[in-house]
Every structure is written in C-alpha cells, then in structure tokens.
Amino acid sequence: MTSLLDYVKCLEAGGRVAPALLSHGAVRIGETTVLSRSVHTQEAQEAGTVAVLRGADAGRAFYHRRHPGEVLHLDIFHDLGEADQHGLAQAIRAAILEFAAAGNPEARRLVDYIDLQTGRGGGRLSGSLINGGTRQLRLSHRNHVHLAAAIPDQLLPVVFYLVAAVEEELCRQGLQLRRIERIKLVPGGSAPLDLSAYGAATDSYLRQEGGGQAGRLASAEGRGAIGELAALAEELGGVAEVRSLLDTFSRYPATRDYRTGCLRDWEKLQSMNRLQEKGIIDFNQSDSALTERGRQLLRALESYGHEVELEFRRLLRNTSRLNLPARHGLAHGGRTRVFGSGPVRAVATPDRGVWVSDLAVAETAQAAALRSLGQGERISFRPEDLRQARRWRDIPQDTCLLVDASASMAGKRIKAARYLAEHLLLTTRDRVAVIIFQDRSVEVRVPFTRSFARAEEGLGQIKPQGLTPLAQGVMTALEYLKSARARNPLLLVVTDGIPTVPQWTLNPLDDALRAAREIAQRQVRLACIGLEPNRHFLSEFVELAGGSLYVVSELEHWAMVDIAHQERTGSPPPGKRC
Image 1 (cartoon, rainbow, N blue to C red):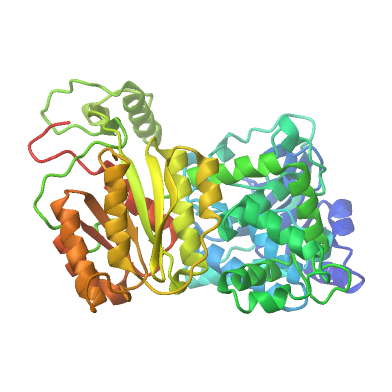
Image 2: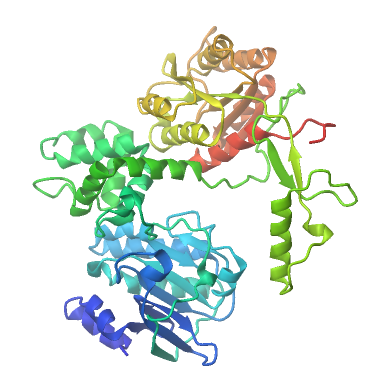
C-alpha cells in the first residue's frame, strides 16, 4: 500500500500519479482519506478499515461510463455527523482557485466535474447541491465526505488541496476527523455490485448515458463537453453567444482588436474574463487565443450543437427555485386579482377532520412509504399520510416583461432578465413578450409568443445603454397589452435603478408615479423586481399601481424565476375553496 510519503515522491519524480494508482489500486492521503479509481466501502466488522473493490471501476459503477479509469473516488472520514455540503463546496472551490493560481489555470473548470455527497445531501460542485437527499444515501454518508471527480493526470496534485480544504472545513463545522487504520484490496469485479444506497437524482456531468449522438462523443471530450458548453451558455446568455465567442477567439490574432473593443463593452469584457478564468482562452498564445480545452469545446459545439442546445434548455427548465419565505415589500391596491393562471393541480395535506373528496393516490402512497421505511416498518397507511389534490380552473395568461436596458443593466443583470424570459417559455403555457426601455426610447423586442427560438433571437440583440425612461416604458407596455388583446396580463417590471428620463414634465420621478396610476386605472396586474437602494421610490410606485414589490440584493436569475412563478400561480381568492 502506498503511504503519503511514497505518494509525494511520485509527484516529485515527475507527477506519475496515475501509474501509482493503477499499480497499487488505492492510496491513503494523510490519515483520513482513501483515494482510488475503484469503489471502496467501509468494513462494518473492522473499525477503521476500508475495503477497495479491485476491478469495480468507480466511473462505471456510479456513472455508467464506458471506459475505466476516468473517475477518481475519494472518501474523507470523520466521526458520525451530518456535514454541511454547502460549506464544504465553498471550501473546495476556494482550494481549486488556489491551485489554479499556483500555475494551473486550466484547473478552474474542475468545479463542473466534481461531485460531493455528505450526510445532508450533495450534487455537482458547481450546482445547487440539493440532490442526494434520499434517506438511505444520507445515512450511508454520515461518517465520511464522498467526492467523485474527473481529473486529468496532469492536474492530480489538486487532490491534496481538496483533501486539506475538506479536513479544515470539517473541523470548522465541529466534526472530528477519523483515522483510517487499514486499507485492504478485495476482488470486486466479478459479482454485480449492490449500489442501491447510491441511487438518487443527480445533476452530475460525470454521468454517461448510452444512445444518441451525445452518447457517441469521443471519451476525451465526452458528455462533459456538452455539459460544460450548456453551463457556459447559461452563464453567458445562450448557445449562440458561446458559439460566437469561441469562433471569434479561434481567429485571433486576426481579431487582435477584440480585446480593445471589450474594454468599451462591459458585457463583452465580462464574458472574456470568464473564459480566461475557466482556462478556455489565453491571449499569450501566438496562433489562437483558444487553449487546447477551448479548441475541444469548439469542435464539440460544431459537431453536437443540437445536443448542447437541448442540454441548455434542460438547465433552463430545471432552475432551482428557492421558494422565498415571504414577499419582500408591498402588495397594495385592494383590487380583485385573478388567480389560478398557473398549475391546474396542487397537492397538500388536508386539514384534520375534513373529508378528503379528491384523494391524490400517488402522493399518498409515497408519503406512506417514506414514513413506514423511515420507521423500519412494513408499508402501511395512516391518516397523516393522506394527500388531497386541489384543483382550480386554468386561466390563460400573458406575461409581459418590461425590462430596464439602461447602461447599468449591462452584464449579469441583463442576462438574468433574458434567462427569465426563456425559462418562462420552457416551463409554462404563457405567451411571453419582452419590452425594453433605455435612453429615450422603448421597443417591443419580443412580441407575445410561445416560440423559444423567436424569443431567443430577439433577446440576443439587447444591448444595454443610456438612461432609464420608466414612465415611457410603462405607457408603451400598457398600450401594447391593449393592442395585443392580452389575456389576464401580468406586467413584470425588472429594473436596477430609478427613472432618469421625464415623459410629461421635467420630473422623471413624478412622471413614473403618474404612469403607475395608469396601471391601477387599467386594472393590469403588476409585479416589480428592484434593488434595495431604490426601495423608497419603488414602494411608492408599486403602491400607486396596486401591485407587488420584490426587493432583492442583486438581480440573480434564480431569484427572478422564483418571483415570477409566485406571481403567476398566486393563491385562491379569499373565501374560495380550491
């Protein structure tokens, strides 16, 4: 068995870590960690002993990968307890950045290809970390932190950074580290493995499914390239934007003035910086700004653009909504609001003593199974397991996004607004329109549509600039809603500032408040998302319009998605039963 000293000698001798793993099967890092490319488990009969199943490849067992040796399996052991996966993920990401800053810039992309699991949950390191929540999976990880990672051989020294970060964070969380006394290799490749404890929904980019063009990608690029490109599209504003950037940098130095142009375009500058941080571009190269990783991604995008688009849309649909505990701000006006424009069915626990007239059979069975198994009993049904289906009439709805496209919205904020529009088109049956206001003009950028492609084309042409003509934007939106004969319209205003361009007088604030009164008079439902520094004005604006105000610290896409869905679905009117 390889000791830590032997392992370090391997690094000093030329970084031949992979051969060491292949020849020895597993290594121990420090006193707490077992590292291998195989599945390993803790021996119940022998405290402090970890059994490594030789021949049971971790990538094949956990992620259905076709080629062995592609996934590393690390377990860092501690005393019984539920380690917080979010704190651990933050510590690991910081360690990767530290390793990248030490002369390994390409390591930054590893955050997308490391999965984490603890006694509380887990998922992809760069994801939401809300997966891995099944009871059996959490119980099996109450004494160790599990990491699975696709790390190229030349970057394997990052493992030491990961282990050190996990150990330090565990101690910070009050969990005592546990020593591994012995590692033993046992045959594990002949018999099928029982990995039922590891079965759960996952957002991992390590999984490799069979079939389809995506499944036929070369293993060097693999499905990870599709996942990475889709994540880039989510971050940078769409697949077309990623394609344009990669194509532009592939022609460098023919486009040597691009960097100078970026300095005058905040959004382009941010995109360029993100690609540099991820090790996709490097301007120190003479032939092309794309690194080898960047060229791999461009080739994958050219060959499998359709699969990347599908994965990007999947990410849009599956945006994690955080269910904000309460609305931030006000909901004034006292007027009747039309509810029930979202889902036609919801499931809830019925009030005690109330006759259940519409039993939700599947959800009732699920609740009974979870309770019974959690208590170690045979599955049985009790009154508390009952779930009732609540239904209301589905009312068609048109959602109009009135988006501030002034200069201060450049970069992440305008991308979040684009993301929101695309998400609504993919997850609802609403017609969606997008109207932008900037400088001294207002434009219907996306007329009411159900077409994702049509909306994506219009959204991609938005370029933030100039001032904030809020009053003009509101009046244009109201006239458009009338001319388009909008059904049960929701006007959703997204702004990061206060009005700076007047409409009727010389005072832009007074004009915006006058426009707010028009919203109430025409009985258009309003929701406004704004920033904390502008709360006072926005509160007055929303109160006069009879709408709802949501004050956020930043215009993040996940928060805006959550707010939009709350406004869409609402709740039944007072006195009306579902």
